[in-house]
Length: 388
Image (cartoon, rainbow, N blue to C red; front, side, top):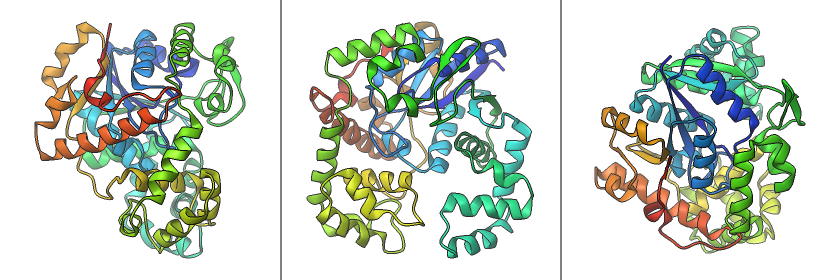
């Protein structure tokens, strides 16, 4: 391994993330590139922390380069999220993909990825779905029926994403070697813990607590960045986010619900009816909830509809640099996609780049509206990259 890649959100960057970067270095990485969600996040929202804060936290903890996972891909299913990240890191020239997993066995995760590609899985999957199961549960049971033991791998969040990374590598036929690492000290969404005397907590755990409660679980340099961002009003205001989403949905014409990404089986009608009655986002999610659709899918559906993310997207058409060490910037010349720090310049490289850039900018503008101190439009074009 010489050029490692990581696909992530860093919302917030914490001690576990720093330990992952350090592990990649110990394994031989001479350069570490991070593909980081920008403008939106996979849980169906916008980042708590602005891009520049998260990018700087990563660089100061040991990353060398941070590129954007544009908003339409960042707020997508695990499969689409993973595929876009793999595509971008492969285009950069990374040779290894580093990620956390509950089962850090690369061969086993690759075996599971190959299993998901087998044609005989599909009738079993359809049978489980017809019984009213969620897609994730149905897929796990179908996999277990074909290869006993595989179902357990597909029931934990980091394994699921890791398997999607392996599947994307197979599908795209790219030269990325999976390198799964264990989650140290704290499970995804679980209680806080420690590893080698260092306090550990997942990002989902931290997001449920106040900023000052983050302090033991994040690097000191990152905590200083977070406090500064809070003092400047840059953190997410959940109430503004809720009002903005509901306002966009209430103003939407009926046809927008029908063409929203992720809509199927009359879900657009359920969404339109729920929007008319809901008095909060949680109320909206509750009105949409059924046994078939998990909460995360509904959150993404709501944000996709509000921001008009289309169902079909091209492969990521450019590499937008959010931050870098100066010494690493020459690597961009060898990238297999247009790469740079200017979104405006990248959007001029082709029609697909223009389309994705416009969607991404829309999400960044929306995110800017949802800060404690509302920020101006156009930050996707005017924000300066973090250069160390």
